[in-house]
Structures are given as structure tokens and as C-alpha cells.
Image (tube, rainbow, N blue to C red; front, side, top):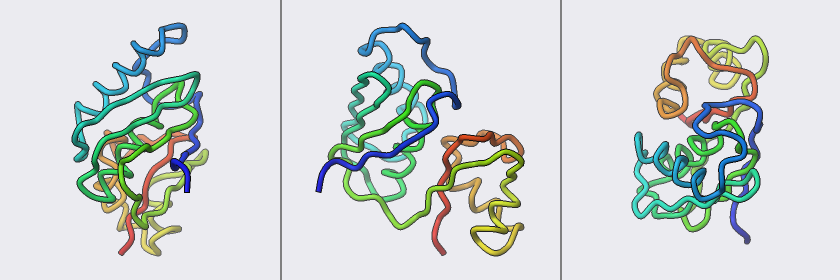
Length: 145
């Protein structure tokens, strides 16, 4: 099996770099972004080429793996994330936020109960700063259970 590759919407997300910056500078900014709220990745390394971020290191668990992928992918200008050597993703589901979605609505659809939206918020703290502010094109994880 090859390196897991995750697709994202490159035109949405947190703006941490400018188009035209060199790939080394972008990689450093992405690494700093992930390190700022590191979900549990040791020996983190980020490489950026074109519109693809490759992240490597050692994830303490599947949740850390998934969160690191989402942190790298939910950045404007990143269309793909390769997870090289992080371990294995867990059994969470990744959901693409659509126009008009709310965490309540996503919780209702994915977990069967809208009042469980806080579980989704807690599982995505690294990419959702405010549970009332999600945006179309953002990718989030839905924890199992």
C-alpha cells in the first residue's frame, strides 16, 4: 500500500501563506501551524510541493494522525495531504462541510442526534475555533462511538 493521500479544497481554509512563496517557506509555515496545536505528532516534518503537503513523524494514536492531516489540509492553498509514516488512520469518518451546514445538522445526520455537535467540535478543535463558524469546503472528522 502506498502513502495515504487525502484531498481537500485548496481555495478554502485558514490563510497562513501567500501564493508565490517558495515551497520551503510554505512548509515551514505549515509545520509551525501544526506545531502550535500539535495533536500528538513527534518528530514532525512537513514538505510542500505544488499544492501537496507531505507530513511525516510519529503519531501517538489514530486521532493525532487524523487531526494532523486535517490541520494541514484545511489551509488555503493545500489541495492534497500525504501522510508519510504517521501510522494508520483510525475509523473516524471525514465529512466535507457543505453550504448551509451547521455542526448541529452534521451531528444529526452523522451521529443521529444534533445535540451531539459538541462531540464533533471537541474532535476538531485544531481546525474549528468556534462551533458556530464552519465553512463550505472545510473537512472535519466525525468520531466513532
